[in-house]
Length: 456
Ligand SMILES: [Zn+2]
Image (cartoon, rainbow, N blue to C red; front, top):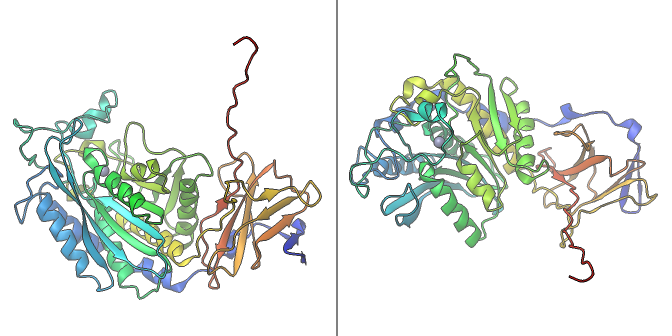
């Protein structure tokens, strides 16, 4: 029911149904997802706990305790997985500043890069640093939220902060997930188009410091980061109120509703649902939980697409507390969350880049031509794409309602579809059926032009 006129494909909409079941499943991704090991996650978490604290303010000179020992172990562990993985410290010297950085610190993210055929980068991340405060997060939650609450301090604020802070869930869980996926991806034998980066951040508990510094460096070095899947507190399925939920994971993303971060969040839900159907992704249309933050927001603030994974039922009495130990972890739950990350990152890294749907001047390439009442969608071809999938939904709704695959074209006309009534988007599809995130056509905000009045 398609006919090609000139460069555009005209589509008769009566022939199209919702074809969300038509995506192609890649057996290699299924195998990669299956390779996530609960036993490996367990071993990593026990090792992380053994450092007793991984605070970025802790002593760095011990080989068995504190952040220095922990980061060295993470580096060596990932180096052992595959010669393809380029593992290094992403290091910064940070002088004292703000309420939390009480002394100069040698701050090091641990970064493992799995080069792809193209330089565009997809990150899977967590933070390995920890904190424990008197009363923990439970006490913080019971009083008015204070996101800047200061950690316990030694008598001398310039001395190392070495109090017990095991941080097995916050964020040993996200760190173990990241390390395990570095293993699974680097040993998969898959030749990914995108470059994958497995990043264990430092300094999150000091104000997202490691993530902010890396995001700044990425801007300076023009690193083409296209998406960050950040995992922070993803290993516990038993809420402090007694409610247990081991079958869902929350994914937070900043708006507005068709921002690149929201596109990434929808992508996670869609492909997580295909490769890990037993685990439900709950999308949250807000940057994060009330009064709480995470490293994905540091990337958002510098313009990168990033989402935050958070367990569905938190136990605040264990967070930021000496009680954040291995006993508070559900390994089966953490493994499922790792599999959702793996599915989304693998699909994204195998797919072509998302189509560009804006002109160089920032105008969306959508019009009412040729009749004046049609939806005429144009985009720039993505390298590696052999087809595209067009999506649309009513202009009041959070997620795509309809989609259809079109051929290797860069222009589609949907007759009598009023562009004012729907949101449209397009994804790039390669020969094996891998799909990019959806690039949406968004009407740009109009600048305010103050009106002059006479006599002023
Ligand atoms: Zn955290």
